[in-house]
Amino acid sequence: MIDDLQKALAGVRADIDRIDGELLKLLNERARCAQKVGEIKAEHGAAGHIYRPEREAQVLRRLQDANPGPLPGENITFFFREVMSACLSLEEPLGIAFLGPLGTFSESAATKHFGHAARLLPQTSIDDVFREVESGHAHYAVVPVENSTEGAVGRTMDLLLGTQLKICGEVVLRIHQNLLSNETDLAAIGRVYSHAQSLAQCHEWLNRMLPNAQRISVGSNAQAAQLAAGEAGAAAIAGEAAAARYSLPKLAENIEDEPNNTTRFLVLGRHDSGPSGRDKTSLIMSAPNRTGALHELLLPFSHTGVSMSRLESRPARNALWEYVFYVDVDGHHDDPAVKSALDELGSRAAYLKILGSYPVAVY
Image 1 (cartoon, rainbow, N blue to C red):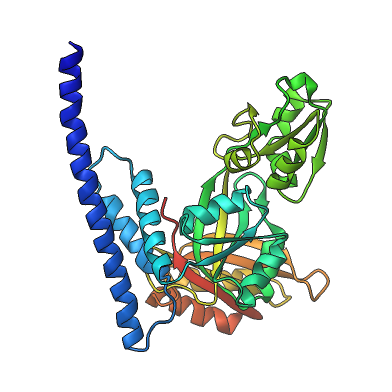
Image 2 (image 1 turned 90 degrees about the vertical axis):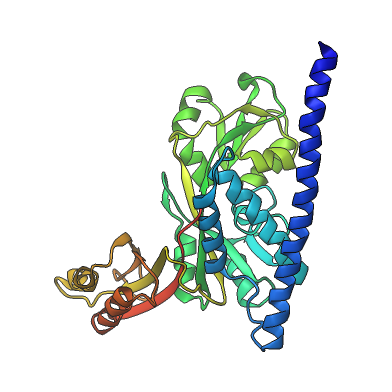
């Protein structure tokens, strides 16, 4: 019976070895085609940006639509992102700035979007993430902009107002929070470190399970893991990446209060994206200080049939009790309807800044 099992497995394993050989050949063939694209661009003086967000989104959507299974679409996206990341790195590894240290959700978002062949450049603050790209030390930035539970990330939104960088992509990351500690019993935990947003996302769980533990806000979840790894009686709230990087066991998993807790990140560069077929456009506008002014600003979208997916206000930094509005609309700024709406908006708004058009996140 064992011999029959081994014979049956040997046949399947031989098929796997053959397929792996074919995959290896095809992957290198694809890499040579990617190199050829770079050579053709250079020959025609069009080298420019080696990363084209719209092209990547189109490829991933096409592959997801064509996928017959059994692999789920999410796995197909992951695999081909890594293939594209490796192919791009043959020309030049992309430098990606994000809020560090290593082990943060921002690192997970950067890797999810750009793959493991990218050159990761962790920064100590969101301000530094912006500056790293503005100065040319990094190609792109990945910054958090909103969380489904805790709302907008104010510092990112404030910096978008003054930067010359453009939004060229977005990443949507499902957030699973874990309690990490070298302790083996919840009763031994006297301090819990984490980023303020993560502490808020786990507020009810902490009330139930660790009501007497001190909650200490730090700069990032990865920093929290670093601290907890070196202190008796300490724990950190952080994700899988921090647990793995700092070798901290998970004392409790998925402790976030909202099961669908998700963070949206923006990809920023010195260019935006061409049309991909499923795009968003983000902008900032301000209304004249008079009755009905905001209503007037929204009319261009109604007139042109452009759908607005986000509207959020922030205090203007240059005037007391004045506000600017952050808006996301469906479509690319080159789409006729969106272009018409923006043209009309430009004549109505006291201030208008187009932050960029970019592909809707591919999961």
